[in-house]
Image 1: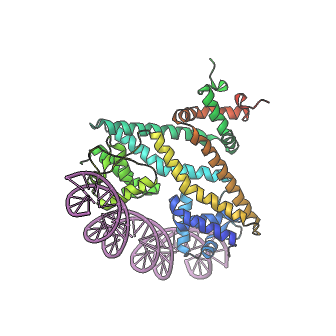
Image 2: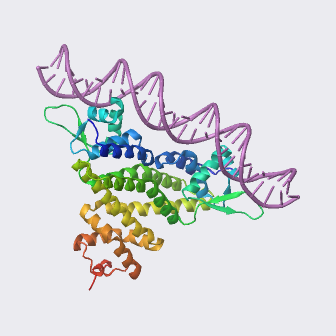
Image 3: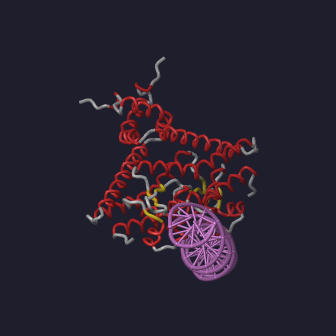
Length: 183
Length: 183
DNA sequence: CAGAGATTTCAGTAATTTCTGAAATGTAAA
DNA sequence: TTTACATTTCAGAAATTACTGAAATCTCTG
């Protein structure tokens, strides 16, 4: 497969950004290529389009699968594996956020709890700091858990309303009438 | 300086997580150490505490400064530089988010706009996909810009209210009475 | 402004990560 | 089964990134 100039530039950009995003260049390029392809692609096509080795493609695809970022498809009468990215961009964002949380946040939250469990270490400042950090992460992951439940439409609405909600909290101190529980 | 077991374990964890967060081990360790220290530390102390070279400490501190993650302090009668992390954890989170956005999102947004400017490339699917991605990133960065303005207290309130706001959007379809503009 | 102390730079080395080609393994249909 | 792809594994090579020690630069202060 030969890439169009548009695809080419997009793919190269994602390759370069890969390192900043914690993935390697090849993985970024494979993902970018799949993202722009209306049809699922097989490993051989990807290999050829990106000019990399077949084994590198295999490893890259495995990595993307471990991130849940690609879907496996099959073409009737062809036993090769074909890959695509989800049509819904919000689904991609959700997956990305979920996986990053799992890899970048959760292990630290566990470690902080573990450190707290070990009991007083005679270093009040450090202990307080760790507790504070754990609480903050718990608050953020709690908020995230709520957002995760929302499907796309409501999430978009929430983001669109963002500024107004913020302004309202400002004015009412969070006592938004419709949100106050009645007894 | 000799680390307590608590500090030691925390520092090592941040070092290991460093690579997942896109920073190197040393930078993670330096930051962790400063985070747990009630007093500002100078480069020599850090070098000794972490068992690394003086030049590595220098480079690590420079990196942290480029991320705006540390503050420079001075002790009267001592001309060495001392470093701390902000007391306010929310400030740290803000900085982290702002810097990651700057490094991980903004360049891609620019690139997408640039690609769109280049005009029709005769690849409708890829063009649509790029436009959609740009729109999504613009929406998210727009929301972020709103949130960035809120100071800690209101942000905490918003996160705490998170689930209720989400529920409300659910029920009203976004037509939250207090938010609907009257003419 | 000389000298002591503090910090940064940088070339070389070490460590880590990425990539490849070849071999091994898996799998469907002949 | 056997055969013909298809995919994965893996050891070593290549590339990149991190780290060190020595030298250079910067900056106070006596």
